[in-house]
Structures are given as C-alpha cells and as structure tokens.
Image 1 (cartoon, rainbow, N blue to C red):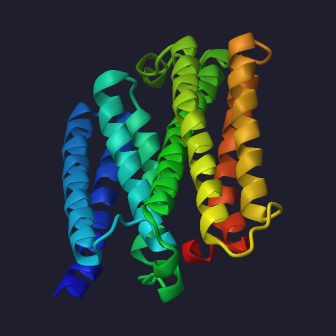
Image 2 (cartoon, one colour):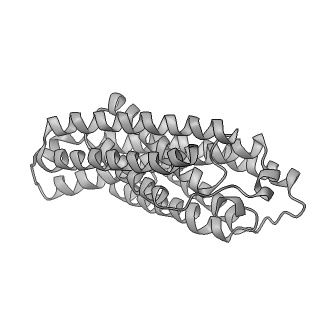
Length: 276
C-alpha cells in the first residue's frame, strides 16, 4: 500500500504543481491577480501534500529522508516551496514565488520521474545522526542559495527594464534594485554559515566513521570551493568591492556551481556513494 502511495502521490503533486506554475506564468505575462491568488492556493496544497508524504516516508523508513539522491531532491523541493511561501508574506516582492518555484518544479520533475532509490545496506550501516544533520543542513544551505539566485535574477531583470526604459507593469511589480540586492545578500548570509556548519559536521563524521579518508576527494574540494565563492560574495557586498549588476551576475554564476556540486561532483566522490 505504501509503495503505491509512494509512486502515485508525487505524480499528483507534480500535476498540481504544474498548474500552479502555469497560473503564476499567466500572472507574470498578463498581471492577472486572480490567477496569482489561485496559483498560491494550489501551491499551499502542494506544500501540504509534500509534507504529508515526508511524514509518511519517515514513518515507513524510521529516519529523516535525505540519505539518497531521490530523497534529497524531494526534501530540497519542499524547502524551496516552504521558503517561497514565507517570502510571499515577508518580502512582498512579486514574481519571487514564481521564479523560486520554477527551480523547485524542475527538481520535482527530476524526482517524480526518477526510479525510486532504496538506501543500500552499506549506507544504512554508515548512517548516523551526525550524517543526517550534515546532509540536512547542506540541503537547507542550497535552498538559501537558490532563493538568493532568484533575487539576483530579478535584479538583472529589473536592471534590464530600467536601462532599456521599458516602463511596463512588470517594472512596477518588482522591488527596487537596492531591496533586491539586499534580499540576495540576506539569503547568502543565511546559507554561508549553514554550509560551513555542514562541512564541519561532515568532516567530523568522515574522520570518525570512514576507515580511509581522502582530503582530496572531489566532493570535499568542491564544497570548500563553494564556501570560498560565497564567502567572497559576502565580503564583496559588505566592503562594496563589488555591487550592483556585476555582483548579481557573480551570484547567478555561483548558483550554477551549486548545481554542479550537487549533481556532478557528488557522483565523482569516493565516499558520497549513498547520494548518487
């Protein structure tokens, strides 16, 4: 019974999610407030169904669902939807929910049509609370960086509209450039310490649990490089070494490396085999 729910519920979620994204797109193109309201209600339904699925999965497996790529993608999508719902009430920036959930829907689609992964016996043996906390915090940091990327993208869109003097409805529905830049900085500020803490916990776990530990593992190098990139972006914003459009471009490029580190480099790792 659970396997049937496990297979069908994500399919139902992705259909509702797609309708929500479609309505948000209609609002984006034609400033349709009714479509925006209905899209938000559908998004609430998606969040509720995903939350139910997560609890069912935890009850069935007896652990937090982040041990495989299949589980990690689902949790990452849930994090993005949760953040977007909070943003809807706090920042009041139009299109933030739409663009954030474009990312979320993309990963949800990958998750929905990917084969279900069961964690291996070896992975189960290696699992510990320290490992679960490490992976969970890492995914939360990726969620923060994703939203920061959305604000940088909106900054670039707003900058383009202003430069070209295209006084359309979209221009007035976006926040001013300073607010978008500040919001991007806030989420980088949240993501950076979470990523740092995740790396510390991950290294501590590896030194305790693994018989052989290689510091030159691609995943370790990639994660520390990612930490350096976002550390530099925070420094550049605070010291005004870089700002405006250039900083937004660097931040979007940094998010591309987040995706590379999440998908590609993890598969090259010698000890992140449970997450591939």
